[in-house]
Image (tube, rainbow, N blue to C red; front, top):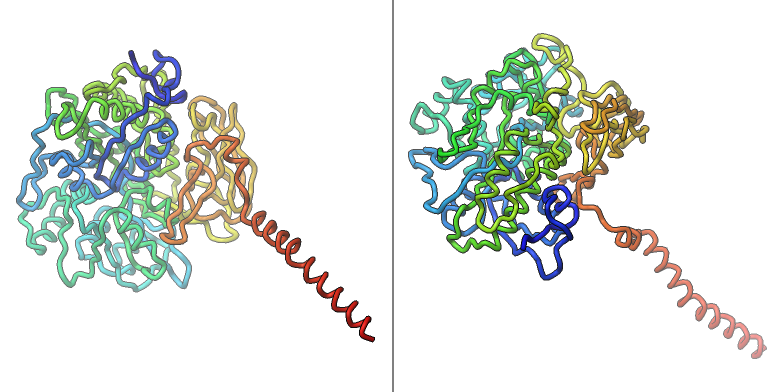
Length: 571
């Protein structure tokens, strides 16, 4: 008998099944490792499905380690930005002997997060061409006042400060994505650097970044490591390549990158969606690299909204019961895959990613059926509620992507609006680049706009307005049409917005230990009983003081009165 998922998953993904699973029908834990590029999305999805009895353990150890662990059989699945077969430093990353397939998991943009200030004021609107980015990360451009950077940033006075490139010390998909782009677009610069670092040329794609002693590069493990290093306040002058999501979490800006059409663009969800329209997908089901991507068309995409370093990552799943993988694990993994391919994609944008288009979702769902023990081979894609889907099959997110402003055009003075997770300067208003949160069915419906967290502006309106709260816009924000609600949302915020995701999405909670901030709107919904049962710290403190007053003060007063009575008697 077919086992069912909890109500939300059952309703969204398994329309043929009935009630929620009984307590005895629990999922068994599954373990995975790999990409830190994708980990912000994966970690959120893991938390979401815990309420349905699923336990998905994931270690963000880097794409190369994830692939190696899957090959060794020490994990049930891996997540990576590059497939097996890469020749890296003379060693071929051979595929495992166990059966497996690739499945798309989430799209996004590899961003250039930086820490730079002029006269004590943070720079938040930096622009860089491909030649300059490559020059920075190959050591030929070493100062922020370099004429090549000044050419990208007319009207912005940059300091005479050493540039400190921060690169990955471990084998990573981020490095592979970045080096793939440099090898395709700036081969001469990349080869010269690789040769100086002792690598053979043509250098091509590598998951381990070559470094040259004395060049002043800093190497850190994982996306958390490079982003955390740049986000330290004292590390002014640093720049790294990392998933856009990390810039949103840490509250730091990213460089707008020059595209083929001559516009500097940010790796927002819609700009990534437009960019990926140029990707070629391996559609040969008999190929060992079925569903993997060729991004050369993304790099040269002539749409002026394109972010040129757009891509997507893969989850590697088994197709046989080997290395301890069982049908029971396959049931859990198949259910989780069905969740993130459909319902989970609604949260991609607020987490700093871009939701997968319909062709990749459908192909991914087809792959789910190859997992041993999976019940979820017949998911109705019409009930996926993905924000990229449309009735005519086109990518709604890409179709509705806003055009860049003329101040983003090469040669013009750049826009003064901040990028990434950076907050606007105090007292400055203006119109945000994309404004409202695009609503979809499921988590937040409709096309309502965001509202400024700092200014407490009004919630956007639409046919079915979204209720998310903006975390990074200041001034007026104009929303785009909601996928379902259909209304154009608007919202205003008149104060200074806190650093946080400019796409809105709820309050931002920051860790005192790491400095990283998390948008909590996409956390699993708590029950009313749990919410109402929470007690504020102030209430607890007040209760303690009242208890002290009731217990301690009366005896003291009593003893004082007795002493006075005794003194009167002695007189």
